[in-house]
Amino acid sequence: MPFKSLGLSERILEGVRAMGYLEPTPIQLRAIPLILAGRDVIGSAQTGTGKTAAFALPILCRLGRHEPRSRVLVLEPTRELAAQVETAFRDFARFTDLTVAVFYGGVGYGLQTDALHRGVDVIVATPGRLLDHIGRGNCRLDAVRYLILDEADRMLDMGFLPDVRRIIERCPRDRHTSLFSATIPPQIESLIHWAMRKPETIEIGARRSPAETVKHVIYPVAEAQKTDLLLELLRSVNYDSVIVFCRTKHRADRVAHLLKRSRHAVTVLHSNRTQREREQALRGFRDGRFEVLVATDIAARGLDIADVSHVINFDVPQHPEDYIHRIGRTGRAEATGDAFTIMVAEDATHVHAIERFISQKIPRVKLEKFHYQYTALFEEDKPGAKPGYPGKVRGVRLSGGYYFGHMRRRRR
Ligand code: AMP
Image (cartoon, rainbow, N blue to C red; front, side):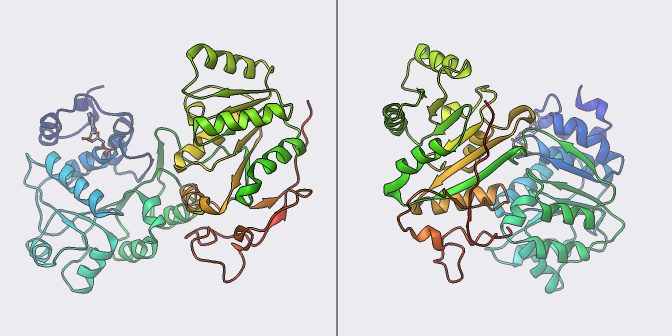
């Protein structure tokens, strides 16, 4: 479907053509008609989906001609995003007389104040600097008709939600509000209830939230006991099939070798293996000849391996997205599954990042019969724990202390 049939005005369509866009992206197809019709929209979408145009084009259309009072406010978590979104608005509005300005911290107030005094149709801003301008009497929001909360989950992560609420309180109640966020954690949900009116939700692309059917836990352990813990985990869990993820090919080979020596039916999958070897490994794992597949992250993306009962992260993934991909190997298609992550002290930062990414504290558990050596990780939730350990996840409710994991027994 061409842009023309979405109901955008000719001037805005000219801007779209000048940008070289030929067809609307899926989020544009769905959001543009809704926003044009005056609906509040929740876009569950990530950057790269064309979401900026999805809200900018219909809003610019509805503004019509320039007025000195600001009628659009777009809140962004970072300067870079604010600058990027301002540029997009300017590009789309280039055949109109509408004006756009951006406000963020780290630069002087002079030019920003001048722009506000002249009057701009569209304000794109980070919350802190906008509040500064409001406090200095440079800016009023009482004419705002369109409010966009972009990258809402990142604003939450960065601790901006209180500022966002203060800003919203200064906007008229009678306004249209749209919110874009890759994930919708509970805090964003309550913001939605408070700030939006009968919003329509559009979900584009994969949600970053982990499969709801997966139960995931972390096993903290001293570095020297990592492999012993893995062996003990495999002994205590009555699994059907398990993927063990390692950070490097070399580690995957080493772990596979160790498991073989302990009489596990194991195969290994990483990019140093030939296509034939990889296919054999996968086939053998799928048809049940191997019950353990040791893999690097290549196996976490794209491959359709169904019915994995357990995922064990022998190494904590370095990128939070990889955690989602890894645990997505289990709990597929409504099946239940468990995801275990073995964590040593130096993984604290990465675990912290994963927990922020999924907006959830992953419970720490201990294996009941395992003889643990001491590690400072066991102190992380106690009062006075060393800073830097993931007891300090912002915006996430912390569960206190440890509990002993109870392995779910599976029927074969
Ligand atoms: P966004 O998700 O808004 O950050 O957009 C990602 C990139 O896609 C930007 O470089 C946009 O200019 C581009 N883009 C957005 N919509 C379209 C479209 N309909 N056709 C081609 N490129 C697009």
